[in-house]
Length: 332
Image (cartoon, rainbow, N blue to C red; front, side, top):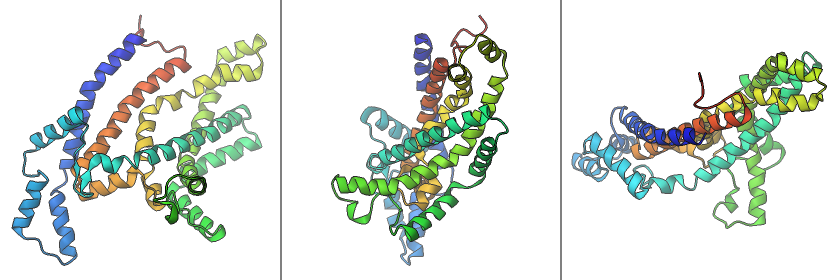
C-alpha cells in the first residue's frame, strides 16, 4: 500500500505539469485578449482608446510576450514564489482574489455534500430494504424529482418565498450591515440565517441521483450469495446490512472523489450567481468572459489538481471500504 501511494504521488508531478500546460493553452484559445475586451467595454461606454494606449496596456500586462514565455513565467512563479500571477480584471494579485472566496466555497460545498449524503444514504438503504413499499415509491419519486429539477430554479423559488414570508433577503452570506464587521454572535446568527439556503440547494441538486445509486447497488448486493450465507449463519440483519452490502453499495460514492473535490472548489456556479454568494464559481465565469488569463488559468489549475488528488483519495477509500481491492496485486 505504501509503495502504491508513493508511486501515485510521484506520478502527480508530470500530470500536474501537463494539466498546467493544458489549462494555460485553453485560456489562450478564444480570439483576442483582455486588452481587446477592455477596449470594447470602454467603447460601449462611449470612451475611445488610442492605439498608443492599447499598446501600453499590452506591454503592462505582458501580452506582447510569446505564449511559451508567459507560461514559463506563470508556472515558475507559482512553484518558486507562490505567486499565481496578476488579475487584470481585478487589478490585484490572483491569490488576493481567491483567498477570501476559497473558505466560503469549501464551507458551502462540503456542508452541502455532507447534507446530501446524510439524506440520500439512509433513504437509499431504506428504499432498497423495503422494495416496492409505499416509502420506496416515495423515495423513488423524490429521487426522480431531484434529478429532473434544476437547482437554480428551486433556489429562485425558495429565495422568493423566504423574502416574502420571512421578511429578509436570503441572498449572499451576510446582511449588508455585517459585511465588514468583525466576528460576533450576531454575525454568526446572521450567517446561519443565510447559509442554510445554499447548503440546501447545492445538496439537493445531487441527493436524487445519490438515492438512486445507493438503492440500485444495494439491491444488487442483497441478491448475492454471501448475503444468503450470512443470513443462514444467523447474523443479525442490521449487522449483516451495515457490515457487508452497504460497504459495497457506497463504492460509487467513494470512486467519484475525483469529481467531488473539484466541485468543492468551484461550487454550483448557477446557484452561487443567483444567490449572490462570494465563492469561486462566479469569479471563474467572470474571468473566462473577460479573458483574465492568469485568474482563469489559476482556478482551472486548482480544479485539475483537485481532480487528481480526488482520484487518489477515492482509490485509498475504496481499498479501506472494499477488502476485495488490493492495489498492485491484480493478476498475481
